[in-house]
Length: 237
Ligand SMILES: Nc1ncnc2c1ncn2[C@@H]1O[C@H](COP(=O)(O)OP(=O)(O)OP(=O)(O)O)[C@@H](O)[C@H]1O
Ligand SMILES: [Mg+2]
Image (cartoon, rainbow, N blue to C red; front, side, top):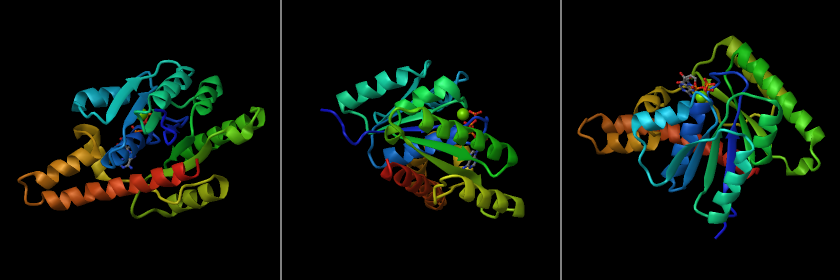
């Protein structure tokens, strides 16, 4: 039976290294912790997400990671998943492109997330992508049907410098910014080597290391943060 609650969440940025892959991994892990069935489509020709999934040996019935070669395939794939009714979230880790490629992805998405680090380069590329989105709204036959766009401030240090705080203020002025930030956490770096956040947390909790429970708590915090971001962006969709 079709799953009317399925959500397609596309994470984009024009600039490399904004934190797309890290954010997609965290969002999927938070959803899986709640038992949600997920697909991650990797559109990056470098296939960073697929390489990661193979390297860490993802073997979980709740997650499929697939390469998406052409942007116009997303519509067909999301329709298939919707009809089959066996998927709750589709996440798209998309390389930073504008133009027809991005238009195709937007047409098949419920939500677009732009991760933005607090740096000049990211500020500029977020501006460019936001301009593309505003243009899309003007070109679209039915602007109401377009996915909402949300900027997620990413890799945010616990203690921000004056410059970083200024970028944060500027972002809130210029873009629709999600109230929960994607904080800089070493748990994400560990996940990039070891696997999914919630799986690591579980292993630490059950492991023999006496500090395992404390470490697991930090992973839980990272997951709670990702869950809050996912909730905020999909609630509006
Ligand atoms: N919240 C975070 N906490 C810690 N490190 C982070 C966080 N977000 C991103 N990073 C780090 O920033 C770097 C770039 O992140 P990532 O690979 O996710 O970006 P990307 O947008 O997918 O890059 P690319 O365009 O090259 O695919 C990585 O080293 C990653 O570990
Ligand atoms: Mg990436």
